[in-house]
Length: 207
Image (cartoon, rainbow, N blue to C red; front, top):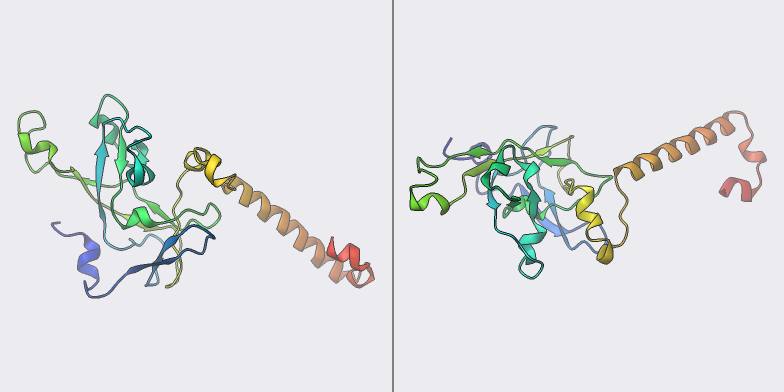
């Protein structure tokens, strides 16, 4: 258990993920898989998580504030403090973008914990490292090599940034759009089978 399983599975000489321009316009870089992934397969090596228990103000969040998750990401991590706990995600998983209609990986809540035998209130080295490691990112569906990875940030992340990003469609919006499109295509198929499509005017066909 000393090394993450993904390290043992694939050679260190082969890149399993890579960064390139995101398929989301104006989103900067995105993370792509270099291998085909099966549903449930771990993406790249697992990661270290760092609990943040100090209050972070607007002036000192910076990049760390963008890649911090709520304590719901890891089971029991909320007990690290009587106050709120955030999770700093410093690894490759923090580079994954979110698209509510295309999310294809998720951050598994199964991080391992190891305190290295140090007493939390007696040993001075206890606060010098994170207890949380081997945190996997998992494919939620089969993903082809060369595909961009997307993970759910949660609606709150986008609502808190509407002033700078504008309104972003959520999963319910994409689900509703799928229903509308399915109804439209079904109607066109019915019209085509009944021979009525060619009898419609150009304006009616385009509407």
